[in-house]
Amino acid sequence: MIRIHILNFSLVKDALGKKNIVITMENGVTVVQLLEKVRAMNKQKLDGLPIRVAVNQSYVNENYKLHNEDQVALIPPVSGG
Amino acid sequence: MIKISITKEIIPVLQSDEIQTNNGSELQFYGRVRKIEKGQVISAIDYEYYQGMAEKELWRLGEKTISKFSISNLNCVHRVGKIPVGEASLKIVIWSKHRRAGLDAMEWFISQMKQDVPIWKNAILKDGSRISSKCQC
Image 1 (tube, rainbow over the protein chains, first blue to last red):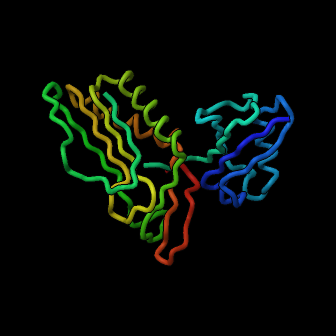
Image 2 (cartoon, each protein chain N blue to C red):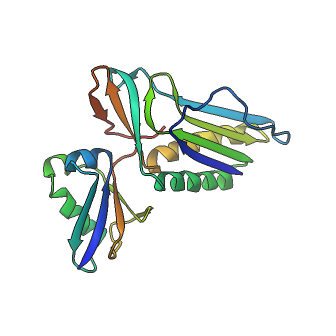
């Protein structure tokens, strides 16, 4: 099992009601599997919301395999400027 | 040369930062907080950001912009936290020998920033309630 530190921002944070979450998942879990688990926490608000994922401050694709103690940011559409 | 920063302080406007005698074009762009957001009157925007990654992404974009266009320097300051209507949230300065490269670089840098840099707007209405941004805008 691995432990993953999740940082939620903007609409994801609003939907989950928390800035930080720590979850435990199976070894070899991918980003897409993590996103399925997170979306299930609030289907009403998270279904259909585009979410990009950054691991340790770099964007990764959905097939990226997570490692123990990774810091994973859930990034909904950005709106700087 | 690239300079990137994220600040919680007021961004000073209408000052030329440096003397660039090799460059004939200096473009200064300011993004300011509008009074109307999504059809509603607001008092401020509270900018949320991912500390560390936002700076990293801005720097990466700065490097890509300098390699893609014939520009000499790019400076970018993005303000975060609560910014009242009318104040600047973003300042970008680009120097180049000629204006065309600078104008193209400015447009490209801003467009990319609005796709990749983890910064989010939360509009604050007059009554204090908040609206999170739901789109790239």
